[in-house]
Length: 402
Ligand code: HSE
Image (cartoon, rainbow, N blue to C red; front, side, top):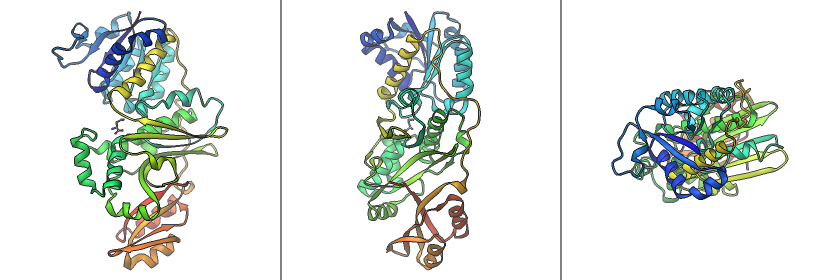
């Protein structure tokens, strides 16, 4: 018998219990043993829930119970989730989680503790929800040097940008709708400011290079400045606007950024619409690969966690290796990042700014402004020019190479 304790009976935790109930036979076959939920930790009461006998309110019960093999951390947040995870690992229990905040902040430390205690810290569901991406990065790409990862890693913002693109909606209008539908939180900062995508690209890049990329070091720009007019220009460029998490591995350095990008309609990521996520991984031998699916949602996320539970069950008493060292990766600085930029400027400043940015393509003027595409220049140079002409630049969006 493999005993599982689920910490947190919210959307994801209850999804894990539901999947273990519904797909019991298949899961047990794959695990080679019966997988059974022994405890559900939650401070709330769930009257009428069929698992009444399993609810506990004190995490010590599950940490101290030698019968518990695997703990699911579906608490969310950092403080308590980190503390409970650490204690479970120190007690030799494997921990499966979707909590990207804890993984991005404490990943290498928790992996080390797991190894020292012959158990596993595993987090397939922390990036891309139900999309298999972390396991493929580890196993299927063993023979590869990863050259780049380009991802639509946040479903909420992709839903909002798709709506703005297809229905010509305003940012505020679409945010309200996303909140009403339950995609965006009442405080939407983590999604719309790019923080969620930032943690996800930090995790994927760390796993690809085997060293730690601190999410705090990644330039992160959200979608809050994107407006209707940007989409009109995007159409003229045969593009859509996507919030991307991007990392390129070149000359032993990682170039990472999270920002809205103009994505040409020929690029596969331009076709990813609504709440869906997609991640393109380029290996030096295999070339481009694309992973697509639901990046969030109860059963999609829980499905990835249950797959991790099965992996831990099969490897009971051992550590599933994860090559992510507690050693800082070298990040490329702004002088080493080159992009073309789409820039909107006030008409009276166009001559000067377009010369500085070496405009290559000028788009029809709209009202009192002109849009243009700059030559490829370094991020350092661009930011300097942007700061110089702060008052005259209405907006700018980087352009993704096709
Ligand atoms: N808020 C996240 C998203 C949930 O919208 O993608 C999954 O991490």
